[in-house]
Image (cartoon, rainbow, N blue to C red; front, side, top):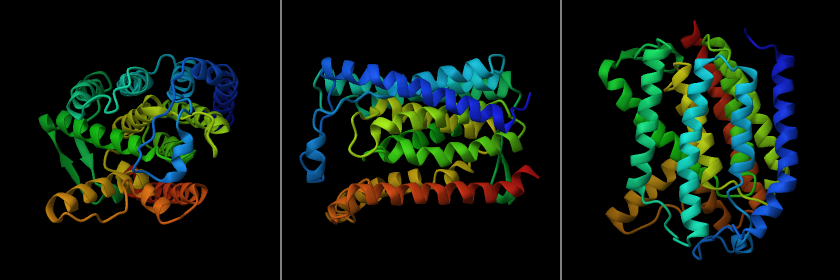
Length: 325
């Protein structure tokens, strides 16, 4: 059954209320457990005051937001696949956070270990999409300009998409309220995309996660009382990737997730430039730190990120017209 706008609003409000209530209990508990954020010495000086701010907030907003999806669409195989994908990525983030803040291992999970854990989850998503949901291995270029049949290359393609998109969303979470607010237009776009691409049950996921993120923003807005950590950001990245795969709009994610592409791209450019020329393009990457080091207030940087995210969502919806037709 296709959910009405009123029911989606109800799902959103329920998630918001649950997360807002859980925050009152979870944040003091995280403080008592001394699960505090660690801050880079070479980063913006304004971030030093964040040292010790409770982190791993994804436990009380991403987890409930995902589980509440099952309340609204318990029989949907697409929703189950998405929830499993997001939980798997969130679990990788939890291990990373645990190593950093509890075991005091500054590097957390090594990149190769993250990839080793994320890749099977992405391959399982691709398998589920093909075998359980009967989705094709055809990939459509935004605006409907072309279609490419990937065949047996489709699962590796999904794995690469998930690794890039999931980690791009992850590195975007670097300022108070940045990702929790920026992900809202991305998820809102995918509510409309899900309905246009004959996967209306996924709209429940978008609504539930938007509510969870808004509830989390109560505590994560500047100055943040809690930080989502990799637990939350990787879960959101996994969810967004799954929505793209399950709605057969894999490449459209590049437009909808314009902000995350720019953030990840700034890191790639910085690394390549420094390794080849010894010079940095940005004062610090990801790019939101560059603007902070230029003297921008954190709130202005976050506002700009939200605007870019809204622009990406609108661009993605514009590109959808040629694909849904």
